[in-house]
Every structure is written in structure tokens, then in C-alpha cells.
Length: 112
Image (cartoon, rainbow, N blue to C red; front, side):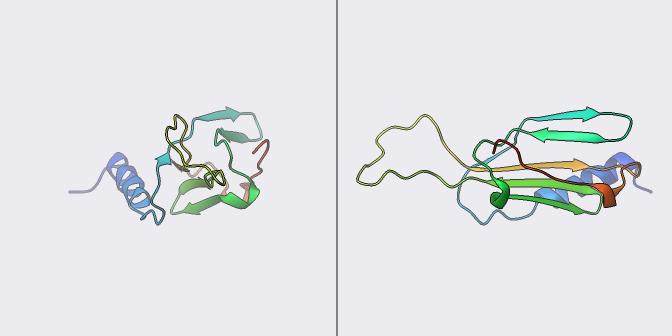
């Protein structure tokens, strides 16, 4: 039986999510705002602590993946006895439609 488009999209998403995380730390799903105008679609992801050097944006098989990493702050001469804030990596994926021109996708980091 032929797969439906929805089943194919789910399989693509699973394939991307199956990538192995090589760092032993939490991976957070950042909150995202998506804005649309007549000329563009703008995606704004909230990834505190991520800068230009620690963000990676990949498009593979119509799936846009945003990865960001934050290095934990270590305090010299101190030992952590209690923490309510944790750092980790960020990952979010989006399935792109044929309407989006992959060649025109741009990325910038602001206030990272």
C-alpha cells in the first residue's frame, strides 16, 4: 500500500531525530516564532547563550534542522552544591514544503 504524505513526513522527522547526540548533556527544544510577509518567512528561535560559532543550520531532504550548543560556566575554586539553572544544547526541526526556495534561505544570530 502506498504511503500517505503524512506518513512520509513522519518518517523524515524520525530520521532526523535519530541522529546521535555525541555530548552527554540535555537537549532542549527552543521556542520559535514564525513570521510571514509577502516576500519572506522569518523564523526566530529562542536559544539563550548560543552565538554565531555555536549554531548550526542544516537542510537535508526537505528538513530544516537548527542546532545550538552552550558551554556550561564553571566557577574556579568552587564546587556546585545546588543548581536551579542548567545549560544544554538546542535542537529544532521543521519540514519544508516545495513552496520554500532552499537556495534563498539565510541565517543570522542576534543578541546571542
